Length: 425
Image (cartoon, rainbow, N blue to C red; front, side, top):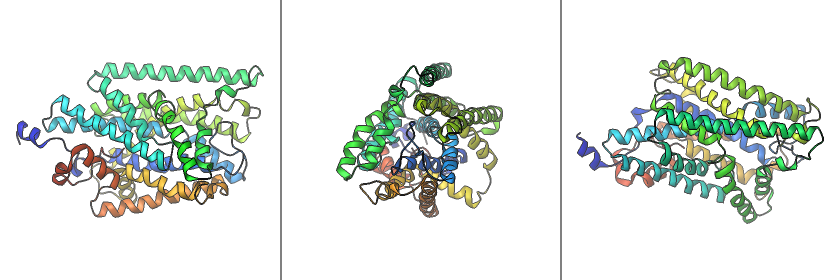
């Protein structure tokens, strides 16, 4: 095919044969962690921690589950998703360039996709979950693609370093604030970001329409500050995803084993080390810290960046081991979810909100942390079964299909019906 012919055909998503196992495996497992993190906010039957995410009462098993989630999941998963999102944007750009599209056309495809993600996220927040991340990543992607897609590797790393430095500075100032609280010099109220209160308001609303108001009040803060453009963690993760995709770190993990091992060990060690301290403080093992818990969320978020990147590196190494091999049943199932990550992510809210929220069946008022974690695992397993059924039919998820049609047009979808690696959010 000549360049002119490729251009005439226009943009198209990645084909089925172009997939690499690491990102799909990471996305599929990551969705288990996401549902575990999100469902904690549905526990509204008792008193919650000053940090907002978990109850302070319950059985010993509930406390153990809370400790595990605080250490390994809370604020440690969405940087992983953001990195993979940035990695996927570069893969999309590369695919369109190979088809002969101009730089202007490539940017148009990517920015159209990011804009539609914002729309998807707004609808998701309106109907079900105000903590939506699709809109946050779409908005951040719009800005970062405009500013950085064609910038040098050095520029990407410098700005990722600046963002990391800002996150660490905020974490350090928050830690000093926590020390002041514990010393009796401050009440600590100003450190409460208010996100947890907004999330609980959307869950505890008695009517669906009241919950809509609460979610749409919460969502703009979510997409800009909490897990969006000004969070620092998400932009840094996306920029590092840009850089890694340029060097095909996940596509050729055997060439980057040292980087992946250092990132995996170092990132997870940093993330879990602070997470354990936060978990012990939440459980009361470290006494007297409760008044400063809200202030300690900033360092929890900063160390979550390192942990999320560590998780990506682990799946990059696993993907390198699996490349070229026939997948086993577990790998097959988890990667099937990863290929349809947007559909499965949205399905989590469809399965959770009507059953757990007060405007629905209200099960969130009666479950404890351990029961909620079991419920979350069950929700993920339902999406696994659904994804496997679609995989056997070589059918993409409905959200991926709709996004591809909106971005690439009906004609290109009919020419290329395979599942797209990068149309998973």
